[in-house]
Image (tube, rainbow, N blue to C red; front, side, top):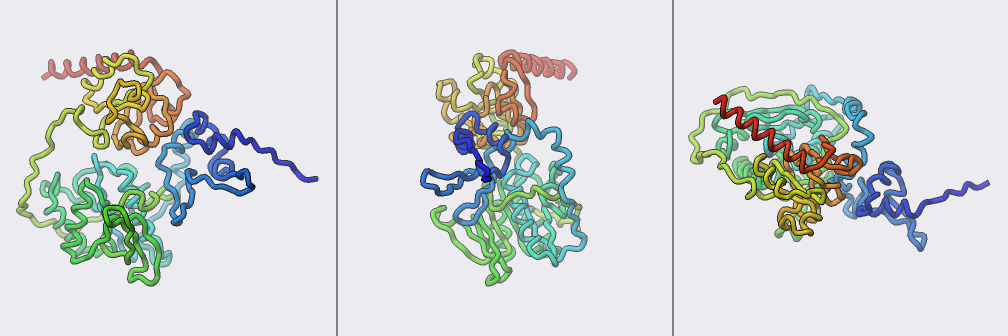
Length: 427
């Protein structure tokens, strides 16, 4: 007797429609890898694949990296209790005597690894682990103090920390001399730097010129190729991003975001590694006068470290603006708040607005549409203030406060002002 399998077309349609309000809950119910979530049969009997599914292999053979926040929102609610166990289950990797080194110089905006840095470390792991019989090690070169939390999870085997007044702040000449010293002592097979405006692009080009190498810039893909000198071929963006250029992978590589998948299944030692000789003193021609205090209201969303964002649940806009001013936060908004005219268009956060990378993102009265979750997926800490404990923003948040946003913000402002007055009185 043949078994008849009944399919729910409505449920499959919701699983494929990212804009449907029940999309995340249906995906969670179906489970990751479910055929209903990744492929379906069309009216002519042709199997169609969902190009937006996590892990989808595109026409160029590139696996789609999840940047949407869907997974976080779908699993945080029921996976929070097992999060620590999942982290403990990662395979521990310790490379005692590496055959070669792959050096990475992360940007570390705000003293922490960014998503771009983690993608770069994922690429370094591919280069280091390609030959299982002759394993390589990934060494990260850092300037100044940084938050070392999560370095072992990012794929780092060795850690070189270069500290001192010479390399603090904007000091490209001193940092170049430091990298040259690292290259002279450890001779990494590859140097990987982020092709970004945060300093990696400039420092990488300086390093390539010093080493006499022809760097590969704008790299977004690296593949094995036995015909190339080092066994790898890279593809980079050229002609103002209008064409791709392929060449053998050089020693110095400037890579774009999403050049590889970040490390997620292993833990590494991140052992300290030091130069045998201290860095020589350098009389630089550039003097860093330090950061300039700016008005948070004038900071672009893409560069803001602390964002207070408003949604449809905000009714007291005067109180919201006061809270942003007292807290020293940059104001943001959901698309609904912008469409209703409460906030200007350049303050819209999300896939249809601005993608943000704040260290702290406070969502006030925002339910958490998929476009908004996409725009905040790179934020370190997300705080949600909402009346609905079941909304997707609450599931995504690291800290959730259930209650009226106006009263919560008023209490927060009062507490901050009271603490500042106490400090002034004590002084």
